[in-house]
Amino acid sequence: MVIYYGNDLDQINHQDLKCNNPLKINYLDDVSSIYDELNQISLFNQPDAIFIYDSTFLLDEEEKASALINYLANYEIEVYCFVKNDKLDNFNPSIKNKKIKTIKKTQINAFNKAKEIKVICDELKVKTDNYQTYNYLVDCLPNNYLMIKNELNKLLIYSEGKLITKKHIDEILIDNGESNIFSLINYLLQNNIDICINLYENLINLKHQPIEIVQIMATQLFKIKLFKKAITASSNVDATVKELKITPYQAKQLAYVYKIPLSKIEKIEDAFFDLDCNIKKGLIDPYQGLKYLISSVNLIK
Image 1 (cartoon, one colour):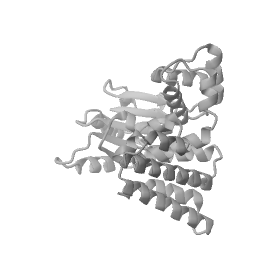
Image 2 (cartoon, one colour; image 1 turned 90 degrees about the vertical axis):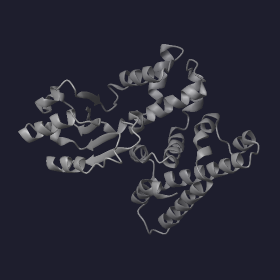
Image 3 (tube, helix red, strand yellow; image 1 turned 45 degrees about the horizontal axis):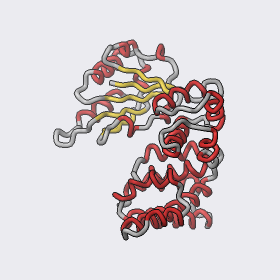
Image 4 (cartoon, one colour; image 1 turned 45 degrees about the vertical axis):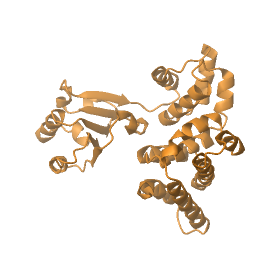
């Protein structure tokens, strides 16, 4: 059993947990609902993990909560619980069970930013050529875990694994908003919906307008469609990349496109065109419309 807690659970990338078929449960303030969900697991379609969101029962000191915690800690399938709470002292005493691992996710702010980025850099093996460059990198990065990780991965690819210089930072981090929207469309096409929603909300918090995001995503989809047509026709891919003004970093990110049917890309492109038209006609709220499209894109085949 693993418990993720803290004030920034959005930074958790469920893909990193390496779970292909998790059972996702939303806790509804009734411990019996958890037992009911687990009892419905089929022997023929067992999940490889259990994700329990809003796990506030972890903060409850009642006996029934303790019993559930002990049950989950010894469950035959790995259980991941997610709860927004800053202090481990607030948890049920059963959490001290040695089989339970706790991981805190702290929101990045001006006071802890340099320290948190250092942890992420060590994890990704990102190194700068000197201390001044590192400080400059910290200043250029946003106060958001997912975006920081995305930007650092871009720098790694762009620098080809070498030491990061100020020149690299200036060249690759110059358009933070649009590059993150490019990442958003990549996650979308790969059906990583949870990451998409988190990244979308973060872009909104950074004052990007929904209609702006829709239009940039539509443009990126058009480029990806042409890229897909080029690789399908076995034409000069390098020439296509240059013509579409796709950066070397973006081209490497598009490796997954080889496995995605052209028809799916075209259907998603049509959905964005319809959304853009409906927004301009005042028929739909831009924020909710894009969020709904992101949430339902995995239904498009």
